[in-house]
Length: 258
Length: 297
Ligand SMILES: Nc1ncnc2c1ncn2[C@@H]1O[C@H](COP(=O)(O)OP(=O)(O)O)[C@@H](O)[C@H]1O
Ligand SMILES: [Mg+2]
Image (cartoon, rainbow over all chains, first blue to last red; front, side):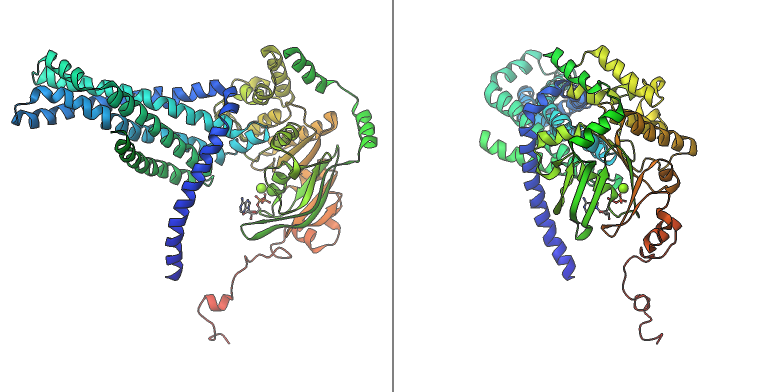
C-alpha cells in the first residue's frame, strides 16, 4: 500500500516531468530548424505524408459535420422562424470552433499516431542510432521536418475542412431543406468577420493545434522505450495527450481571442 | 567549391600500400587506436564497467566476447560517444571522446563504421539509397560519382545486383552485407561490428566472416568484433578480450585463450552452465520463497 501510494505520487511528478521534458524537446526542435533547412526535401516529403494523405478523411468528415450541423440548426431555428440564419450559424460555429478543433483531433488520430509509430519503430530498429553514427543529426533530419510539416499542414487542412463543412451545410440547407440560396450566402457574408473568425478562429487556432499535436507525436516517438510494447503505448499516449491538449488549449485561446 | 569538395573527398582514396601506411603510422603515433583507461559506468543502479582497461591495436581484428548483458554493446557505444562514462577515459586515435564537441564528434564518427546487429537500414530507401545516404549527407559529389562509389561498395559485398531492392526484401545476411557496404562507404579507419553473425546460416556467416577479414587485410581497417562464436573468432581475430562483471577477465590469442586455465575462460568457452557466471540470477533464500522456512530444518 505504501508502495502504491508512492507510485501514485510518482505518476503526478512523472506527468509534470514529461511536460517539462516535452518543453525542452520543443526548444531542441526549434534550435534544429536552421540545420534542418538542408533537409527541405524531407520536410516536403513529410508534408505530403501528414498533409496530403490526411485530405480524404478531413474532407469527408468536414462534409458530414456541415450536413448534420445544418440539419440540427434548421430544426431548432424553425421553431423561432429563423431558418434563414442557419447558414450563418453553421459558418460561425465551424470557423470559430468545430473546424480547427475537429481537424486537430482527426489530425492527431491520422497523422500524429503514424508519426509516433514511425519514429518509435525507427528507434526500435536502430535507424535513429544509425543516423547518429553516420553523423546525421536525427533531430534535424527526422524530428524537425515532421514537426514543421504538421505546423504547415494543420491550417491548410482546417481551411479544407471548413470549406467542406460549408458545402455540406449548403447541400442540406439549400438543396434539400429549401433555404433560399441568396439568403444563405448573404447572411453568412454579412456576419462572418475575416479577422476574428477566419484569421483568429481558423488559422491561428489550427496553427497552435498543429504545433502541439506534432510536438507531442514527435516527442512520444523519440522518448518511448524502443520495444513493440513501448511503441504501442506511445501511439495511444499521442492520441490521449493530443486530445486533452487540443481541447484545453482551445478554451484558453478562445478566452483570449474572443 | 564543389570541385574542392571532390578533391578533398578523392584524396581519401589515394592508395598507399598498406604496409607503408602501417610503418608510417606506427612511427607517427602508437599502435593503439582505441585506448580505454579506468572506464566506469553505472546504468540504472547496476555497475556495467568497473575500472575497465583495454587497448585495441591499430590495423588488427580484435574480438570482444562475454556473456549477454555484460555491456559489450554499451562498450561500443562508449567508443562512438553515444554514451558517456561516469569515470575513466576513452581515446580514439588520440582524441578523448568525452571532450569532443558535437561537430568534432560527428567528424570522428565519419571515420568510424558501425554494423548493427539488426542492420539498421533506413526502411524508407532502397539498397542503393541506403549506401548513398552518408555520401549525400556529407558531400556534394556529382550524381555520377556517387553512383560509381555506391556500386563499387555494393560490388565489394557482392550485392551490386540488389541495388534496387527495398530493405524488407532482403534476407538477414544480405541486409547485413548492405549495412556493411554503407559502413565502409567513407573508408573508415575503424569498424565496430556488433554481433555480426547472429541469425545467419552457415553460408551467410562465412560470407560475412570473409568480408570482415578482407576489409581488414586490403584496406587495413581496424576492426572490433563483438561475437559469441569462438570458432568464427578464431579464424580471423588476432586478439580477444573476455569481459565479465565489468572487467576484462581474460585476454590473448583466440587460438590459445580457451586453454589458459582461468575459470572464466573454462566456463565461457567450455559452455558450462555454472561457474564464475552464476546460473542463478541473484535471489533470496529458496526454502523461504517456497514457504518451507523452518519446516525443512
Ligand atoms: N540505457 C540504459 N539504461 C539502463 N540500463 C542499460 C541501458 N543500456 C543498457 N543497459 C543495461 O546494461 C547491460 C549491458 O547491456 P548491453 O551492452 O546491451 O549488453 P551486451 O551487448 O553485452 O549483451 C544490460 O544489463 C542492460 O540492461
Ligand atoms: Mg549487445
